[in-house]
Figure 1 (cartoon, one colour):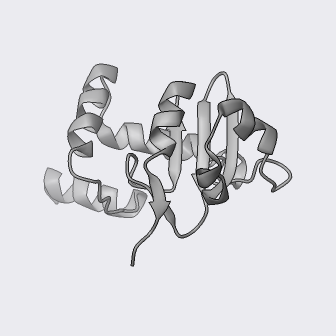
Figure 2: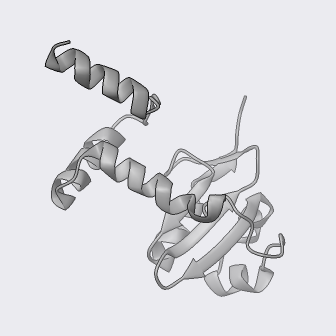
Length: 136
């Protein structure tokens, strides 16, 4: 067995392969970020997944504790009333910033997903405006 066969065999035995599709332009942003951090894209994505799945449960998609939306938080953030029915979960922490998960059937054009995760409140106000119902 030559070196390439050994490496391919090792990878096949020790790792699962997962295809990842990114919106146009996001790959360049990811590669630039990884270059700044001096790590590979695989290592970066793996660390995000491992950190999110700590405790065997996704932190990103977990409810905010009681499964209800805190209306006072949205008032404090000054989120317009027309976007409030779209929001499933909203939270804030000094370490992680502002986080909003939209309900099924809604999408945010700025992120391309149901998730909005930003560091500044001004960014949240600008980003939430790009949310709408999915047109199928």
